[in-house]
Image 1 (spheres, rainbow, N blue to C red):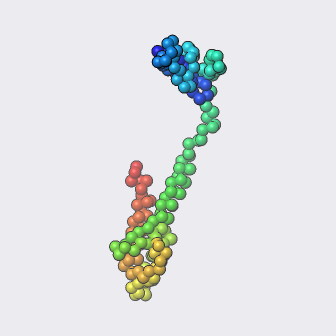
Image 2 (tube, one colour; image 1 turned 90 degrees about the horizontal axis):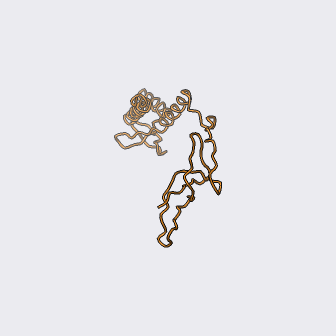
Image 3 (cartoon, rainbow, N blue to C red; image 1 turned 60 degrees about the horizontal axis):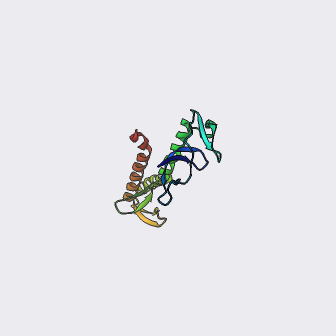
Length: 167
């Protein structure tokens, strides 16, 4: 058994590794891939050793350029991102009534439902043709529309309050 120098893909010393004796040739050692048969270098703090083909050259370890690292997001950026995510979640709301009809539940749809409910009640009309989430016009009752509005409002409230529930 013999200790040799393992190099990384750029030729820098990584560690000592074991070279096993060859089972076929006496006195010959099997050098692992990426390793060189050379004594382990003594490396002072702040330095690294690079193989030059016949030995090791010592180099200063480079100090990472902090300017290359992305700056952490500011509180304002985090707030804008949270608002974008919340708006997307609200825009994606779909609700299913007890009758199985699926309604869009975004804010614009909620406004339309509220106006339709007010008009249906004022006119004493029991139903209206409504375009459901699948884009199919369907007869819906005042009760179904009211239920859909309530479900959509609850879903939106859940989206809006989610960050406060996690805290």
